[in-house]
Length: 107
Image (cartoon, rainbow, N blue to C red; front, side, top):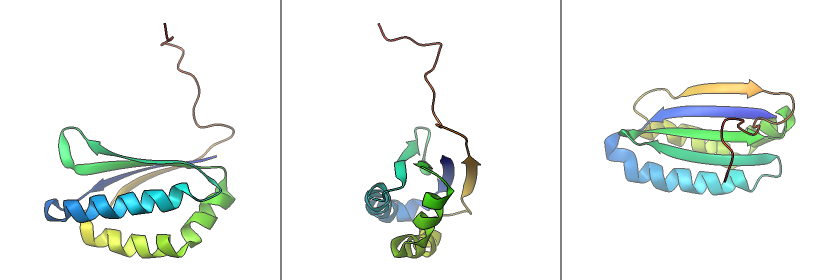
């Protein structure tokens, strides 16, 4: 499984463009057969910072993802709305990326 976490700082004046663009991108990525999840979150203390969390079944699915035309179009477009180079954390994991949290039990 591939787990990718991306942190992006958006130009304040491009916020509405970003929100529209990331929503469309999210819908496209979620439709890929090798995608397990794709979500983005706004920092609760900094409205110009967003985190994207995405998982793919394996490296082949990740490679297929970046080959899509909408991905090739998204990356240059993203460069027009960010105020700094995004940071990325990429992990190729054995098995599932998520496990049950032992410290919390629903009651």
